[in-house]
Length: 305
Image (cartoon, rainbow, N blue to C red; front, side):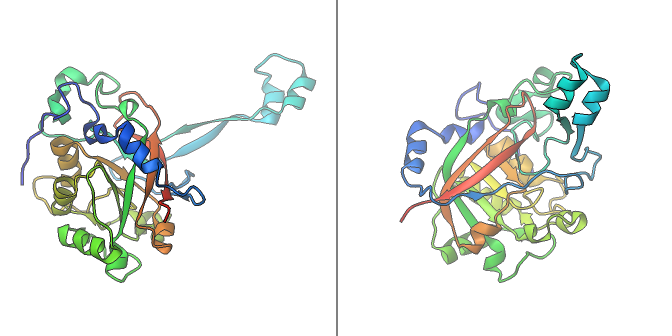
């Protein structure tokens, strides 16, 4: 199935798609319902050797010290007395990684069709030497919305979905029925495949992952009216792709056709354990100008009774 890039219904300058549905009123409605006595951290920590999208040469997470207490005594970068260096004990570090590493969000310039991205922004006009001039992570607002976690692995009675299982519309409807939850326009929908049970084993977590298929993505976007979709796997979608026209059909469709953003490597095990299906979702990316993705700290606060 082939698609074309859509013009945004939010205007010719829109760069955030359905995140425009987040308003003062929608935030107020969510905040009025949460019970702050419980907070679920949905993010993974970053560490050397963590699984990441490294199949096509993207760099893994790296961290290294730039200053150490003893090294500062030797190097004396501040040009002060040795006694001062020993007293201050300076440590510093730096990191390097692919912007789609760990718990993260994808922006609308990440994938498109035929050189176009969301809202008909053109590569030839909007992509500079280093980054896109439009639709970057710097444009995203903090996401405060109703969250819904659909436990697809639980629906199937397994800890982890079978390799390359595709989550379709029937699975989503059945999970909603089982969990007694209804999708609403403006939701952030999180899909549990159980793949986090395999984290952080590189090959078991990454290879032939189950995930959302194109039919399921279309259902969530068009029938469910969601603004963002997240998963506990690295690609959100079913891999390898079942679509001969695209190796990441869900990404392309969600970004370029309907303006729905994707979040990946979301930790959903505690929500599933406690059978929390509906909650306030909170998260914000780093404001990396023009970036196709960004690390994101995500958390859920259940609604009060």
